[in-house]
Length: 301
Ligand SMILES: [Zn+2]
Image 1 (cartoon, rainbow, N blue to C red):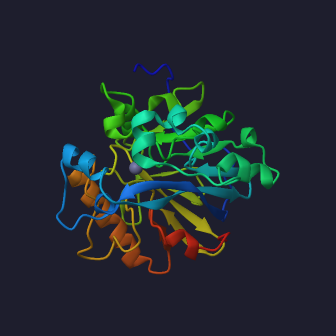
Image 2 (image 1 turned 120 degrees about the vertical axis):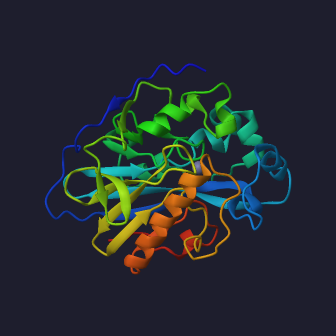
Image 3 (image 1 turned 45 degrees about the horizontal axis):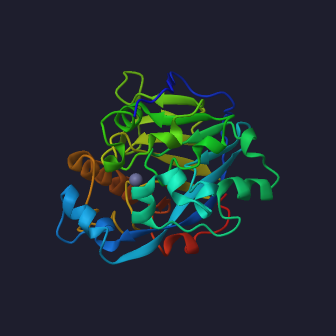
């Protein structure tokens, strides 16, 4: 489908940063989807598309779909990813499309979706000013329409891949989720102005104060990005789906069966693994690890 929404390039930091700022982060599991274990960690390496689609019919397990509420002292609350859309509780196909809905069998408990959790804390979803999308896959961009007041920050390469091609769902995109009159802002990691940060070759300091640094970790999807957060309790790196499971940064770990670009995927894993080695006390969140989110505190920093 042709996408009507036109994003604007994000040339410099968003307003609201303040020197030395530290954020606090609330990880939120917004529901579960069914995923074959072999897709998350394949002992035999990469799988072709049709073998992967067949694997979706095999044994699966429920995995969490996380999103993160970040409280910045001067830039206000922001989200990283949006979790499953509230409508999925009653009609999964409306938001995900029939194929993804039947493959993933999503489940959302009452009050688990991000808008409900924000309202429970007295935050109106329309008051969220910034949404960072690690990527636009259906289980990450699902609820972006619920945040009409936000600048929605995504990488340029991700936007271009998600809005091109004839059958977006084969790349795990559903443009109907994000083709709304939203203020999409794209980060061009190929631009000359982009800097390196720690072990990452390409980064973008979102508020210019070092508290929320976007780093380019492509490969799982074309323009996947991760987020390095300076919290009051140390560093938290939201790795999106650059890794699915805790432990995938260890040498020799089984990696995902599918990646949009295998070379970039493995290079991003190496950059993340190096970061992990150089910052052993930092917490790095995997995309869909069943046990991981239960072990995290309700609020970090
Ligand atoms: Zn993904």
